[in-house]
Length: 257
Length: 216
Figure 1 (cartoon, one colour):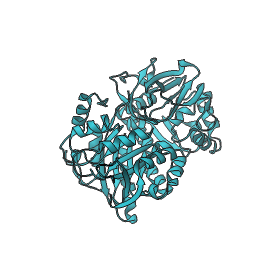
Figure 2 (cartoon, chains in turn yellow, orange; figure 1 turned 120 degrees about the vertical axis):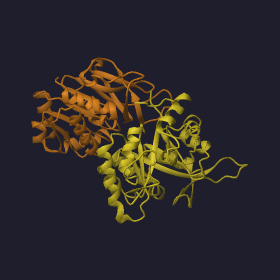
Figure 3 (cartoon, helix red, strand yellow; figure 1 turned 180 degrees about the horizontal axis):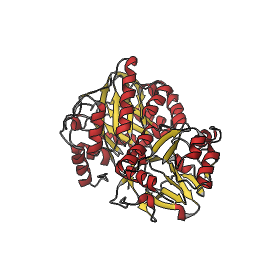
Figure 4 (tube, one colour; figure 1 turned 60 degrees about the vertical axis):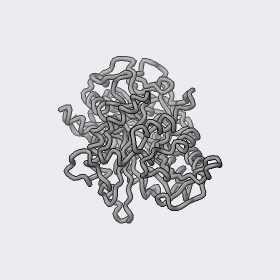
């Protein structure tokens, strides 16, 4: 039986982890590769690097990080952040990423998803969907895509957008609720479910996880195939193992290898 | 022992290279792992590995675009009997035909077609992406010492098509995703995994070590 996936996400800036892993003694908590190795050993099902490097000149540091991680960790690695061209995707895949997550470039040019999937295959194209609720409390739910870390509205309906990128060849959707991101009050379940039920590709729930019950809800009620979390793992509030035991206790299939 | 991982422009071979090196050193087998697009090196290699990601037709085109590669592989594998492992689309290429978008000829080393996974249960997502266990249908040295079945180790899959073999005898293991999905095939010195051993941690490294030891 296919297992649900638990995916820790590391923010990487100029080749260094921001809010690095603190649940184990690392020689260098700022080294993404050491953090990746620690999560590999802890039983993470995949890893995600989100590059938040501002300048394009420092892009090389990310390539080095991806390459060293791929040498040390034999598990799937998704890399996102600042991916704008087919060449960016090629470079990340050649460095050792298994999947590349694209965001703003797909919002600006939907055809980029099609070109990327045609070139590299559906299996490695993840489209990041950052959505915010825009409907009034009394009206039916409506979420829209926001870019620039949730600051810039686009007016695009998130559910319709997810369906469109799926039909263009995205292999997976990384869905972040910008309303919930950083709040620790749980994923936006209505949003997660609306999108997961609308597309035939897997959806990763992200944004708002604060407890292990939130993960159960994201998978069971939100119909996500995977849950992504950052701080609750990095700061040692919960281990990957505890997360998986919780999921298992709630009847969700997990990998305990 | 020299193992050639065949580079024909399909995806990243960096982690496959490192995983094979790790498995070779951890199992004490040693040997040299090379990533190459040179048919001469492929022809002379002791073991061959054909990775592959993306669409079947693109991979086939990529393989054909390297002059002399298919001939070198055929010579080493079919005539000289060197052990061969195909991974993901590299495994699918072993079949007679791929039916993804267009009909494309495979190598025909393991009879059958590569067909779309169409789960009757519409809640099952496609691609089949993530970790799943193996159901072994026959004994095989590649699975020696690897625990299979519901409580066994997991392998990492990411695919929307799978091999539908013309002869069930070539299936070594399946995985359950609304139906039995072909996970591991073998015939003589030729084997292939739909999953990615280079991404499958414990199970993957054990399988790679078994391949390096395999004397078909």
